[in-house]
Structures are given as structure tokens and as C-alpha cells.
Image (tube, rainbow, N blue to C red):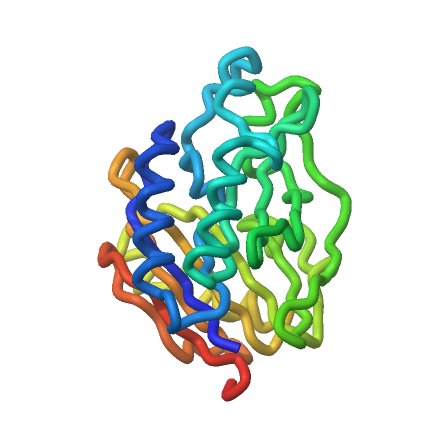
Length: 239
């Protein structure tokens, strides 16, 4: 099983641009990966919300929206399964979620269970968290998802003997990453699973340096350079 971790530029409140980026990455990875992964809230951008529900409700997307349906079509057209973070709307509730799409169909949808995705001192009852941390099956492998702060706030709920994929949005400076944060994230990952794949999008407003990492037992096995669009390919069968 080949997994691609796509650290691409993302623009807040610009779904059209972000969709173009996703299709570009799917086209580039066609025939090279089985599953292509993007970071937390990539579809709309992590800073796409203003915490005014009337406005944010228009930015959020339902699973049956035209946008998600287009992602389903691309997964079938390019023969590449897709995992991406997005701001989800279900009825009157909003979530930071992550959808997995394969062969034109939704395989799994995870809702972040920790509240760090939102300005919780400003939000009301419409902004919610999920309550499940299930694993899903993909190409004869079990996979668990965690979104960003999930792995720090309640790591015990994500422990697994299988692969863990960790979409994040974390905007440390490059110096902070290199001096301590990469190693801190690798150590935290080692508490949860043997193999952890972390994806962070690139963003210029505000500055987010992005990156992608393959952690194994607290060590960095492979990674992408900061501020450089690319797809890190990990072969799990060989890991």
C-alpha cells in the first residue's frame, strides 16, 4: 500500500483554488499512490471561519455537497483514493472533519473529538466535536485517524497497533520546528502507534510552512522540506 502525503499551498476561504490543488496532486500521483492525504481543514483552509455561525454555515460543506461529489468523481477518474480535512456541516452543526474517498464513494468520515479547532470562547452550540475514534479498512490495512490536537489532548483514545494518519495545521516557525517541535511531534507519535504519517499544509496568509513526515517509533524516517510543495510517498508494506 502506497500512501502519498501532499503538502500543498492552501488558501483560506478559497475552495475553488484548493480543489484545483487537490486535482493537481491527484493527477501527479496517478499510478504512484493508492491513497493521497491532505492536512486538517484543507478544503476550505484552517482559518476560513470567523465564528459567526450565519457566515460560517455558508463556508461549511455537507458530505453530499457538489464539492464532495466532485472529489468522489476524481477519485474514480484518477484511480486514487483521497483523504482530506474539511469543515463539515450536518444539519445545523459544524465540525472539523476528515473524509476518506475511494473509487467514487465515501469510505469513512472522521470528526475531530477535541475542541482546539475552534475559538471556543466565541463559538456557540453549533460548533461541535465528534465522539468516535474508529479504525477503517483500506487495501487490507487497518487505519486510524487523528486530527491535530487530538493526539495531544487525549492520546490514549488513539492508541493502535496499526497505521495512524495525522492531518494537522501547525504554524510554528522553521526555527521552532527544527530546534524542538519535529522531535516533540515524533515522540508524541511514538506513544500512539509504531508508524504515524503527519501532513501539514502550506499557507501564506497566515504563514504556515507546511511539511509531511513519516514517524516510526519516535524517529523521523522520511519527510518533505518546509515551504516546498510536494508529495511524500510512503510504502507501508515495506515499513
